[in-house]
Image 1 (cartoon, one colour):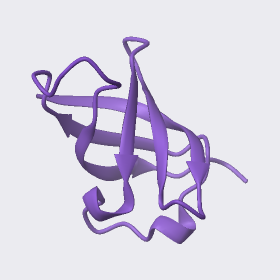
Image 2 (tube, one colour):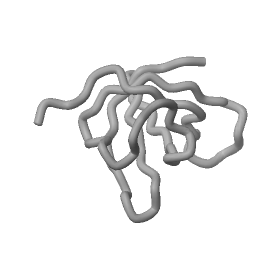
Image 3 (cartoon, helix red, strand yellow):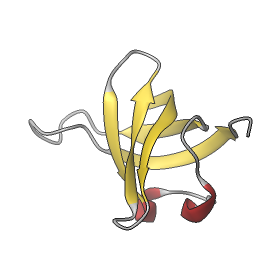
Length: 74
């Protein structure tokens, strides 16, 4: 399933962050799941499209593949 959302937080030292989906859900992502994106250039506010597996267990859902839709205005 694909969703759109916005990068909410980046934890550069850990190589991960969180995406806030348009429907309000929060998704964890890891830099290894970015497709054609430079993790070091991602910023909170960037809009992304991502896939996820809703059957991965009771923890925070995980974004499986994320691609940049629109960079945040800086």
